[in-house]
Amino acid sequence: PRSSLPKHLIMPQEVAAAKPSSTLTKKLFEIFTEYRGVVMVGIVLPLSFAMELAGELRDWFFRTFQVAPQLHDKRVAEVQRQVKAWNASGQRGKKLMCTDRSPWLSMSVRTASFKADCNRIKCQLCDILELNEEKMTIRSEPMVNMRGMTQFLGPKGYQLAVQIEMEDITLGGVVMGCAIETNSHIFGSIHETIVAYDIVSADGELLHVTKENNPELFHALPWSHGTLGFLVAVELKVIPIKPYMHVTYIPCHTKADFCQKMQAYATADKPPSFLEATIYSKETSVIMIAEPTDADTAEKKQMIHGVNYFWKPWYYLHVETALSKGGFAELIPIRHYQHRFTRSVFWELRDMIPFGNDVWYRYLLGWLGAPKVSLMKLTMTPQIRREVIYKHVVQDMIVPMDNMSEAIDKFHEWFNIYPLLFFPVAVFDHGKHEGFIRNPPKCLPGKNYQMYFNLGAYGVPQLVREKQEWDAIRNLRAMEHYARDKGGYQLVYTDLFHTRDEFRSMFNHDLYDRMRAKYNALGAFPEVFDKVKPEKGLISEEMLKKIK
Image (cartoon, rainbow, N blue to C red; front, side, top):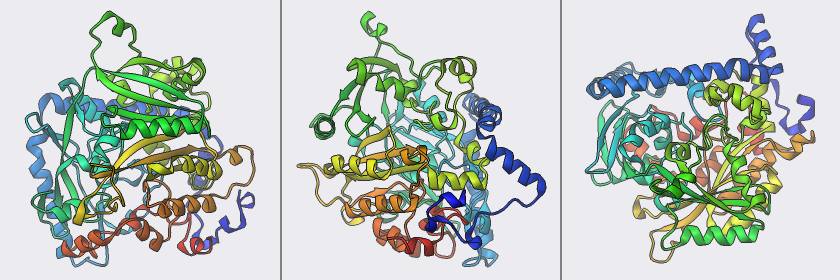
């Protein structure tokens, strides 16, 4: 309710969220808001299951009959035709271009409102094109999601060098945005594993971009969110995998112990192949280290644990048992490991379906899988969206490793949400081709990277749970200021509370601006900030400027 918000969060009517346009729509909004849990279980879950089944059938068809590669050139030519037609129509500077993908289908927390004012280009590019086992690369169209990628590569003994967790995230989304994973302490972000981009420019030209033939554009494309051109294919590195992951759970009962161990693991000369942590309070956490393995002995076979079967407890709760029963190890089937947090949407599902981990629910309805983020957004009313942005947190911050202890304290102060996600990530020095992410101020001895970490908070702040006032804007802006002050970054799929100038100070726009001018993207595509800022009607830049 407006009356329960801090005064500076009560928005004037001219920037208030759009109201329903008809009596029927108003009634639907009321039902979807008042009975959110019923909508989730009765509508969103079955629809999510149906979408998943349809996707599985489609992927099977194309994998079986291999139709996709033959159609790729034709689909790219159609994108070029539309872009050239837009140029010929004289719309440059008047009506910008974007893809025709429905805003609710994206995996970000917001529903992109900027598309309403854009000329939408059809980009039906949904298929894997080629696995090159000699080069250890895979070439794919951008709309392939992580479920399709692991299903295709897994049986062949491979995965993406940086294989993203959530099944519905698309390759184009992470390549043009950002993504890190549990081996990012070795590989860095997914951008460090890209070999080549195929881009349709603002003039309709097809550009094959590599580090060798066009280093400036190559390093400007990460984090550019489709504002330099339309991604129509990408080639990435793959790595060999084995059928299982040997995962060791290491409980830490003090923050000092956690920071010391994590620093040692992440910066070791021979670090673990996969490394992450889940933080359960200011002092308690569990470090997970993983190595690919075979179940080739009777002892190993007894250690197999399929953590992602629908009747199993959510993975983060399984990990937490290490704090009470002590450290342990197990063998997790590779696809279970790759998508271990998908069933519980990390730990967000506990607030959407509070009984979702109950035994009766898991056995009766767990087979339906997790509700899809896209469908949750589709059924989200303006009132719910406002609740999400002001009474709920989805935030990821990347800062240098020596800020671990302080950052955990700060997240407790700002949010008091647990668990927290923790991924160490190497940030590489690209010399004169510094992109959106600046070169690190110092590198590890003998290395060309500095170790950072991603700290993620997802859920409802404790003050909100206790029905007390929690100031979303002040706390989130404090987090953003802290990240900038430490030379760090905020993942931009989240809700941003930057002004435009603050956003440009966090991210280095020098190379990006030059490439925007060089490839005629000005007046053709929105700027990154205009694509990632909150939807119209939720917050205004004038409001932000009033809040320190």
